[in-house]
Structures are given as structure tokens and as C-alpha cells.
Amino acid sequence: MAQPLVISSAHVRLYVNGTIYPVTQSVSLNLDTGEYAIYGINSPYLQELAGGGQVMVKGSATLVRTHNSGGIQGVNLRPLFSDIAASEYVSLRLEDRSTQETIWSIPKAKITSVNETAQAKGVYHISISWIGQILFWPLDLS
Image (cartoon, rainbow, N blue to C red; front, top):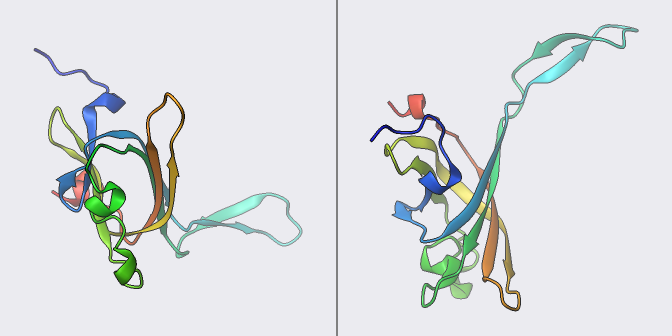
């Protein structure tokens, strides 16, 4: 059977610290490259784009809490309360499950916020946000 040309959301999986997170509903990634605008004297128009600014990698994911999983602590996304000051780095990787190609990888990230939502007659969702140190794309890893 031929593989589809377009990757659908159902064909990606999120790895947290090298382990597949059981149920991931959505993932977003934002890379700010640090480029900034340079304007001329008394000119309202942009003259040049310059690099050298600070690069920022941010993202978020909506996860589903499963029975007896330990939640985000079960996959070491957050430390235990007794070790809260440690707040270790986590690794995140998004993979195309059809081809096993890494879509992106962040070897060192920190979870910056967690929001858990339980709705009547709904699914228990965990939303996390992170900031990463370095973002690797597929060709960076080859």
C-alpha cells in the first residue's frame, strides 16, 4: 500500500524521555529565530532583517490522562513534590509513526505550566507548555 503524501495528526506520536506518551491529542511548536527588523532614519519601512537575536523554542501539548498512569509524574514530566526544586530537563520528540521519521526533537526542555481539566461526560485532559534549549529538525539528526 502506498504511503500518503501528507502527514495527518493521527500518524504522529509524542515521545517523552524516550517513551511514547499513551494518548496525545494535540501538539504545537513555536520557534522564534531571533531575527529582528532594522529601520532607516526617518523611514517607516523596513530596511533589513538582522539575525543574532535570542532563539526561543516553545511548545505545548494536550494529553489524555489514563488509568493508573501516574499522570505527568508517571512519565517524569514533573518531579515529585518532595523533589520539586529539582525540576529536571525532559526530552521531547515527535515522530511520524508511518515512517519512524523524527519530525522534531528537543533533547532538553522544561515544563513551564500544567493545566488539568476534568469535564462531566468528558475526557480528563492535561495541557502542558514547555521551553526548550535546542530544536532539532530531521536533517539536523542525520
